[in-house]
Image (cartoon, rainbow, N blue to C red):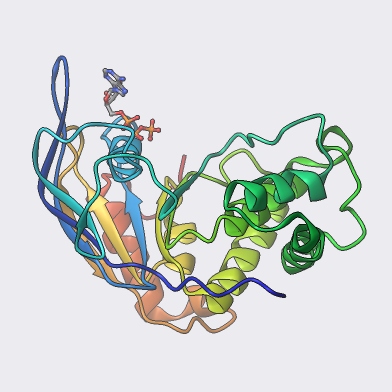
Amino acid sequence: MNTTIATGARVELRDVRIDYDDGPAAEIDLVVEPGEVVILLGPSGCGKSTILRALAGLQPIAAGAARVDGDPHDHPDTKCAMVFQEDALLPWRTARRNVEFALAMRGVLRKRRRAIATGLLDQVGLTGFAEHLPRRLSGGMRQRVQLARTLAAEPRVLLMDEPFGALDAQTRLEMQQLLVSVWLRHRTTILFVTHDVDEALLLGDRVVVLTSRPARAARIVEVARPRRPGAQLEPEFAGQRQEILALLGHSPDLPQS
Ligand SMILES: Nc1ncnc2c1ncn2[C@@H]1O[C@H](COP(=O)(O)OP(=O)(O)OP(=O)(O)O)[C@@H](O)[C@H]1O
Protein backbone atom coordinates (compact mmCIF):
# COMPACT_ATOMS: atom_id res chain seq x y z
CA MET A 1 0.00 0.00 0.00
CA ASN A 2 1.45 3.34 -1.07
CA THR A 3 -1.13 5.66 0.40
CA THR A 4 -0.09 7.76 3.35
CA ILE A 5 -2.15 7.21 6.46
CA ALA A 6 -4.47 10.12 7.14
CA THR A 7 -5.13 9.94 10.86
CA GLY A 8 -8.43 11.08 12.28
CA ALA A 9 -9.31 14.70 12.94
CA ARG A 10 -10.89 16.24 16.02
CA VAL A 11 -14.51 17.17 15.38
CA GLU A 12 -16.30 19.79 17.45
CA LEU A 13 -19.97 20.64 17.39
CA ARG A 14 -20.24 23.60 19.75
CA ASP A 15 -23.83 24.42 20.73
CA VAL A 16 -24.87 23.68 17.18
CA ARG A 17 -28.46 24.18 16.08
CA ILE A 18 -29.71 23.06 12.71
CA ASP A 19 -33.09 24.29 11.47
CA TYR A 20 -35.53 23.34 8.75
CA ASP A 21 -38.36 25.64 7.65
CA ASP A 22 -40.69 24.09 10.23
CA GLY A 23 -38.32 24.46 13.18
CA PRO A 24 -35.18 23.07 14.79
CA ALA A 25 -34.01 19.60 13.72
CA ALA A 26 -31.02 19.21 16.04
CA GLU A 27 -29.37 20.92 18.99
CA ILE A 28 -26.08 19.30 19.74
CA ASP A 29 -22.89 19.96 21.71
CA LEU A 30 -20.34 17.22 21.09
CA VAL A 31 -16.58 16.80 20.75
CA VAL A 32 -15.25 13.73 18.96
CA GLU A 33 -11.57 13.04 19.61
CA PRO A 34 -9.16 12.11 16.78
CA GLY A 35 -9.64 8.47 15.85
CA GLU A 36 -12.73 8.04 18.00
CA VAL A 37 -15.81 6.17 16.77
CA VAL A 38 -19.00 7.89 17.91
CA ILE A 39 -22.39 6.42 17.19
CA LEU A 40 -25.54 8.52 16.79
CA LEU A 41 -28.55 6.47 17.80
CA GLY A 42 -32.09 7.76 18.08
CA PRO A 43 -35.70 7.48 16.99
CA SER A 44 -36.60 7.64 13.32
CA GLY A 45 -36.76 11.22 12.08
CA CYS A 46 -35.02 12.67 15.15
CA GLY A 47 -32.29 14.42 13.17
CA LYS A 48 -29.37 11.97 12.95
CA SER A 49 -28.77 12.36 9.21
CA THR A 50 -29.21 16.11 9.58
CA ILE A 51 -26.28 16.23 12.02
CA LEU A 52 -24.07 14.25 9.61
CA ARG A 53 -25.14 16.42 6.69
CA ALA A 54 -24.22 19.55 8.65
CA LEU A 55 -20.80 18.07 9.40
CA ALA A 56 -20.34 17.26 5.72
CA GLY A 57 -21.03 20.91 4.99
CA LEU A 58 -24.25 20.03 3.13
CA GLN A 59 -26.64 21.62 5.62
CA PRO A 60 -26.28 25.13 7.04
CA ILE A 61 -25.87 25.60 10.77
CA ALA A 62 -28.28 28.13 12.31
CA ALA A 63 -26.34 28.69 15.54
CA GLY A 64 -23.09 27.53 17.14
CA ALA A 65 -20.05 26.25 15.25
CA ALA A 66 -18.76 23.07 13.64
CA ARG A 67 -14.98 22.67 13.54
CA VAL A 68 -12.66 20.02 12.19
CA ASP A 69 -9.19 20.20 13.75
CA GLY A 70 -10.08 23.68 14.92
CA ASP A 71 -11.01 25.01 11.47
CA PRO A 72 -14.59 26.15 10.83
CA HIS A 73 -16.34 23.52 8.76
CA ASP A 74 -19.31 24.87 6.83
CA HIS A 75 -18.76 23.63 3.27
CA PRO A 76 -17.98 20.24 1.70
CA ASP A 77 -14.28 19.37 1.53
CA THR A 78 -12.06 16.30 1.37
CA LYS A 79 -11.49 16.14 5.14
CA CYS A 80 -14.96 14.69 5.74
CA ALA A 81 -16.39 11.92 3.57
CA MET A 82 -20.00 10.73 3.65
CA VAL A 83 -20.82 7.02 3.21
CA PHE A 84 -24.48 6.29 2.47
CA GLN A 85 -26.68 3.21 2.62
CA GLU A 86 -27.18 3.27 -1.15
CA ASP A 87 -23.92 2.92 -2.99
CA ALA A 88 -23.08 5.72 -5.38
CA LEU A 89 -20.66 3.88 -7.66
CA LEU A 90 -20.28 4.82 -11.30
CA PRO A 91 -22.02 1.87 -13.02
CA TRP A 92 -19.95 1.99 -16.20
CA ARG A 93 -16.62 1.80 -14.36
CA THR A 94 -15.10 -1.36 -12.89
CA ALA A 95 -14.49 -1.60 -9.14
CA ARG A 96 -10.85 -0.64 -9.69
CA ARG A 97 -11.68 2.30 -11.92
CA ASN A 98 -14.26 3.57 -9.40
CA VAL A 99 -11.49 3.67 -6.79
CA GLU A 100 -9.05 5.20 -9.27
CA PHE A 101 -11.55 7.97 -9.92
CA ALA A 102 -11.27 9.07 -6.27
CA LEU A 103 -7.48 8.93 -6.53
CA ALA A 104 -7.58 11.09 -9.66
CA MET A 105 -9.77 13.62 -7.82
CA ARG A 106 -7.08 13.76 -5.14
CA GLY A 107 -4.45 14.44 -7.80
CA VAL A 108 -2.63 11.10 -7.55
CA LEU A 109 -0.52 10.53 -10.69
CA ARG A 110 -2.07 8.14 -13.22
CA LYS A 111 0.84 5.68 -13.06
CA ARG A 112 0.41 5.24 -9.28
CA ARG A 113 -3.38 4.92 -9.28
CA ARG A 114 -3.68 1.30 -10.35
CA ALA A 115 -1.43 -0.11 -7.61
CA ILE A 116 -3.07 2.00 -4.89
CA ALA A 117 -6.60 1.07 -6.05
CA THR A 118 -5.71 -2.62 -6.15
CA GLY A 119 -4.23 -2.36 -2.64
CA LEU A 120 -7.37 -0.69 -1.30
CA LEU A 121 -9.60 -3.32 -2.91
CA ASP A 122 -7.44 -6.01 -1.28
CA GLN A 123 -7.90 -4.25 2.08
CA VAL A 124 -11.69 -4.47 1.79
CA GLY A 125 -11.58 -8.14 0.78
CA LEU A 126 -12.17 -7.73 -2.96
CA THR A 127 -9.02 -9.35 -4.30
CA GLY A 128 -9.97 -10.83 -7.67
CA PHE A 129 -12.99 -8.56 -8.20
CA ALA A 130 -11.18 -5.42 -9.31
CA GLU A 131 -12.25 -5.76 -12.94
CA HIS A 132 -15.95 -6.39 -12.19
CA LEU A 133 -18.58 -3.81 -13.02
CA PRO A 134 -20.83 -2.84 -10.08
CA ARG A 135 -23.82 -4.73 -11.52
CA ARG A 136 -21.81 -7.96 -11.28
CA LEU A 137 -21.19 -7.44 -7.55
CA SER A 138 -23.48 -8.19 -4.59
CA GLY A 139 -24.82 -5.38 -2.36
CA GLY A 140 -22.16 -6.14 0.27
CA MET A 141 -19.42 -6.12 -2.35
CA ARG A 142 -20.61 -2.80 -3.73
CA GLN A 143 -20.47 -1.37 -0.20
CA ARG A 144 -16.89 -2.66 0.02
CA VAL A 145 -16.00 -0.86 -3.22
CA GLN A 146 -17.63 2.26 -1.86
CA LEU A 147 -15.54 2.00 1.31
CA ALA A 148 -12.35 1.50 -0.74
CA ARG A 149 -13.25 4.49 -2.90
CA THR A 150 -13.96 6.58 0.19
CA LEU A 151 -10.62 5.59 1.74
CA ALA A 152 -8.88 6.54 -1.52
CA ALA A 153 -9.85 10.14 -0.82
CA GLU A 154 -7.93 9.88 2.48
CA PRO A 155 -10.62 11.55 4.58
CA ARG A 156 -9.81 12.46 8.17
CA VAL A 157 -13.43 11.95 9.19
CA LEU A 158 -15.87 9.29 7.95
CA LEU A 159 -19.55 10.23 8.20
CA MET A 160 -21.48 6.99 7.86
CA ASP A 161 -25.27 7.19 7.51
CA GLU A 162 -26.70 3.72 8.20
CA PRO A 163 -24.18 2.32 5.70
CA PHE A 164 -25.09 -1.31 6.35
CA GLY A 165 -28.85 -0.82 6.81
CA ALA A 166 -29.80 -2.43 3.49
CA LEU A 167 -27.62 -5.53 3.88
CA ASP A 168 -28.71 -8.98 5.07
CA ALA A 169 -27.69 -9.96 8.61
CA GLN A 170 -24.66 -12.07 7.65
CA THR A 171 -23.26 -9.49 5.21
CA ARG A 172 -23.88 -6.78 7.76
CA LEU A 173 -21.78 -8.65 10.35
CA GLU A 174 -19.00 -9.06 7.79
CA MET A 175 -19.10 -5.34 6.97
CA GLN A 176 -18.99 -4.43 10.68
CA GLN A 177 -15.88 -6.57 11.10
CA LEU A 178 -14.38 -5.06 7.98
CA LEU A 179 -15.00 -1.55 9.28
CA VAL A 180 -13.25 -2.44 12.57
CA SER A 181 -10.20 -3.73 10.63
CA VAL A 182 -10.18 -0.64 8.37
CA TRP A 183 -10.44 1.57 11.44
CA LEU A 184 -7.56 -0.24 13.16
CA ARG A 185 -5.40 0.46 10.11
CA HIS A 186 -6.39 4.07 9.40
CA ARG A 187 -7.64 5.38 12.79
CA THR A 188 -10.01 7.70 10.99
CA THR A 189 -12.47 9.58 13.18
CA ILE A 190 -15.91 8.06 12.53
CA LEU A 191 -19.42 9.37 13.16
CA PHE A 192 -21.81 6.53 12.46
CA VAL A 193 -25.61 6.64 12.38
CA THR A 194 -27.53 3.46 13.10
CA HIS A 195 -30.84 2.18 14.46
CA ASP A 196 -29.23 -1.01 15.68
CA VAL A 197 -28.14 -1.06 19.34
CA ASP A 198 -25.89 -4.11 18.88
CA GLU A 199 -24.16 -2.48 15.92
CA ALA A 200 -23.70 0.66 18.05
CA LEU A 201 -22.14 -1.26 20.93
CA LEU A 202 -19.94 -3.32 18.63
CA LEU A 203 -18.49 -0.38 16.71
CA GLY A 204 -18.62 2.62 19.02
CA ASP A 205 -16.26 4.09 21.59
CA ARG A 206 -19.22 6.19 22.66
CA VAL A 207 -22.90 5.94 21.81
CA VAL A 208 -24.85 9.20 21.77
CA VAL A 209 -28.49 8.39 22.42
CA LEU A 210 -30.59 11.18 20.92
CA THR A 211 -34.05 12.43 21.84
CA SER A 212 -36.83 12.68 19.26
CA ARG A 213 -36.72 15.82 17.09
CA PRO A 214 -35.01 18.13 17.72
CA ALA A 215 -32.15 15.69 18.30
CA ARG A 216 -30.44 16.39 21.61
CA ALA A 217 -28.02 14.09 23.45
CA ALA A 218 -30.17 12.33 26.05
CA ARG A 219 -27.26 10.25 27.27
CA ILE A 220 -23.74 9.37 26.15
CA VAL A 221 -22.72 5.77 26.87
CA GLU A 222 -19.00 4.91 26.93
CA VAL A 223 -18.22 1.50 25.48
CA ALA A 224 -15.09 -0.42 26.51
CA ARG A 225 -12.54 -1.23 23.76
CA PRO A 226 -11.16 -3.58 22.61
CA ARG A 227 -14.19 -5.84 22.14
CA ARG A 228 -13.62 -9.50 22.78
CA PRO A 229 -15.42 -12.09 20.70
CA GLY A 230 -18.69 -12.86 22.46
CA ALA A 231 -18.53 -9.64 24.52
CA GLN A 232 -22.23 -9.13 23.81
CA LEU A 233 -22.93 -11.88 26.33
CA GLU A 234 -20.99 -10.23 29.16
CA PRO A 235 -22.99 -8.52 31.93
CA GLU A 236 -21.55 -5.02 31.38
CA PHE A 237 -22.42 -5.12 27.69
CA ALA A 238 -25.88 -6.50 28.38
CA GLY A 239 -26.42 -3.72 30.96
CA GLN A 240 -25.47 -1.03 28.43
CA ARG A 241 -27.74 -2.61 25.84
CA GLN A 242 -30.69 -2.53 28.23
CA GLU A 243 -29.92 1.03 29.31
CA ILE A 244 -29.91 2.23 25.69
CA LEU A 245 -33.06 0.32 24.78
CA ALA A 246 -34.80 1.85 27.80
CA LEU A 247 -33.74 5.35 26.68
CA LEU A 248 -35.11 4.60 23.23
CA GLY A 249 -38.37 3.53 24.82
CA HIS A 250 -38.11 -0.16 24.01
CA SER A 251 -38.68 -2.96 26.44
CA PRO A 252 -35.30 -4.77 26.67
CA ASP A 253 -37.14 -8.06 26.26
CA LEU A 254 -38.57 -7.13 22.89
CA PRO A 255 -36.60 -7.54 19.68
CA GLN A 256 -35.47 -4.32 17.99
CA SER A 257 -37.48 -3.11 15.06
N1 LIG B 1 -34.60 19.00 3.63
C1 LIG B 1 -35.51 18.95 4.63
N2 LIG B 1 -36.44 19.92 4.77
C2 LIG B 1 -37.33 19.89 5.78
N3 LIG B 1 -37.40 18.91 6.71
C3 LIG B 1 -36.51 17.92 6.60
C4 LIG B 1 -35.51 17.87 5.57
N4 LIG B 1 -34.76 16.76 5.73
C5 LIG B 1 -35.25 16.13 6.82
N5 LIG B 1 -36.29 16.82 7.35
C6 LIG B 1 -37.05 16.46 8.53
O1 LIG B 1 -36.19 16.68 9.65
C7 LIG B 1 -36.31 15.62 10.59
C8 LIG B 1 -34.97 14.95 10.78
O2 LIG B 1 -34.63 14.26 9.57
P1 LIG B 1 -33.34 13.30 9.53
O3 LIG B 1 -33.30 12.70 8.17
O4 LIG B 1 -32.15 14.03 10.00
O5 LIG B 1 -33.74 12.19 10.62
P2 LIG B 1 -33.08 10.80 10.97
O6 LIG B 1 -32.96 10.75 12.45
O7 LIG B 1 -31.81 10.61 10.20
O8 LIG B 1 -34.20 9.80 10.46
P3 LIG B 1 -34.18 8.26 10.05
O9 LIG B 1 -33.67 7.53 11.25
O10 LIG B 1 -35.59 7.94 9.76
O11 LIG B 1 -33.26 8.14 8.87
C9 LIG B 1 -37.40 14.71 10.07
O12 LIG B 1 -38.60 15.11 10.68
C10 LIG B 1 -37.44 15.00 8.58
O13 LIG B 1 -38.74 14.79 8.06
